[in-house]
Image 1: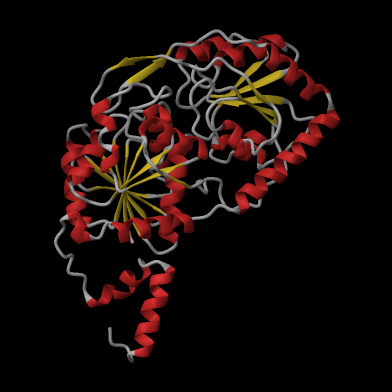
Image 2: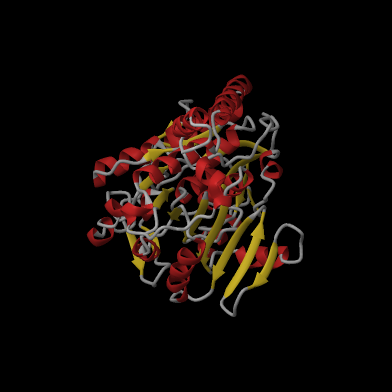
Length: 434
């Protein structure tokens, strides 16, 4: 298949859940023989330019300039077009669909919905990869409700939700069906067992308002003799960083592409999110190393915890203040007051009771390993085939693509296993005549 991904995310940014999930998906599909291309606008995100410039001269990816405004990146067989200038991205999308002729176009994390509109106008088969209800234009957990943007979703040819929770959210608040597929975002494993009662840090990644900053700072102050590690990534503000630096038992860590560097020092992982986490793949990531996780009871976090204990109550965010831009509107949360008592009691028990700790550590490792063993790319391929069968080119109003005889094998591979069996049986009976 030819698969095009259009997203409002920096493709190579290594420390965001949706970024990582989409990148591993495209690399995995490429490894399985599909041709994958990504188009993304140049997006400002803290720390990325430094990372990108540092990696330019490495052998991790190839980089070239197609034009003054387009940078081409090639990594693990995936071709990425990074378009500078917000207005130029729309014409580039149209040209890419026309030239590449994708069988499936994926649109992801487009809170502006302008990229989605541009893709739909090309009449390509379009599937939304939904990682977060906050960027959706409907329901109580979105940044901002917009009826005109909600009207785009029934025009899609498919929707993939990252969790049962998000699938239910689509159904409840927009009346839309979606396909739940868990993303194979964690690598192939095996994963080292790093859970250790004697590890030094209570760790949080991306400490910020949406990720429960009042709880994080409150816990650090409540346990002055316990060391906390704050790994700073994309949503930590300067004010939050300065507040953390002022707490004596908090150390500031830089993010690591090799997450084992962080987890090897982690005793307990905290995930006190206050916004609608659609799943929370970092929870599974920590549990895959045997790290006990304490998480908030919001969104898909209980689902990510695999039914294990220590899902604690919070007062979730109910309001955001938006600052308008074309593609990258900024939404600042209004943080409600939090009850720290259950968090203090739970963390206190876990860090002081070795037997309790080791029991939860072992359960976390086992449950996460069972979950990980069921992940793969086949479910994505099957869903793409189903969408292609449901929406053939003729139904989309496209002209015949004039595939050459040399692409016959590719077209056969696009069929479902049942259709391939039927075709092979027919060819056998007719001596190769269709």
